[in-house]
Image 1 (tube, rainbow, N blue to C red):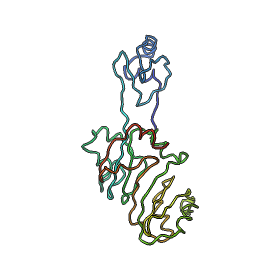
Image 2: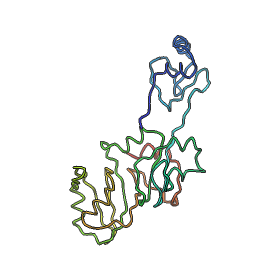
Image 3: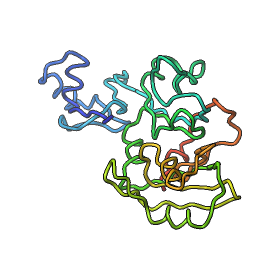
Image 4: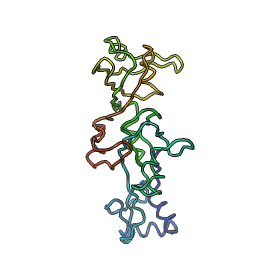
Length: 240
């Protein structure tokens, strides 16, 4: 979901129903500001989050939203679903419908996985978090059906080949916490990747919970199903 940009003169022309000659005039008269800075270039690019004023009247002031959610098991990471409650449904009562409809999900979790989910309307931010080249780590707690051994650690670190997609997973870090529990850190998020990797050992994942993305840990004060906006520092530092 890319953020669309347009030229400033085109935006003003369409918003105010001015012809291009009139747009050049208001710019020359120093009547237009973009993000608090006097605009003079008709070809300046603006996007949906640019704060634009003309004669101190606000033409556009869309707000960015960055939300942390503690997803429960049984809720789907989707904007709409006919069978299950969605992560968007969990925001009802906290955010207006227009805001909820503007959000998209940053790194989905499947139905039976719980934990940290991020939602935003800023696609540039979400692309930085999900792009393979940035390798933002996702941290999971895993509970298994059968005991773990050191063999798992080396297998995860080497990566695993999945013939169906004809890909080898990126190296993953596995730390054994107890005979049946581990921490797993991935820098990618392929379909059911953790469950399939443990499946190579015929070991079923009983509980899967994402507790951090990059530098951002799930707020321990958030109950299951609860959410809160991210702070400005969290937005900036998550992928640092």
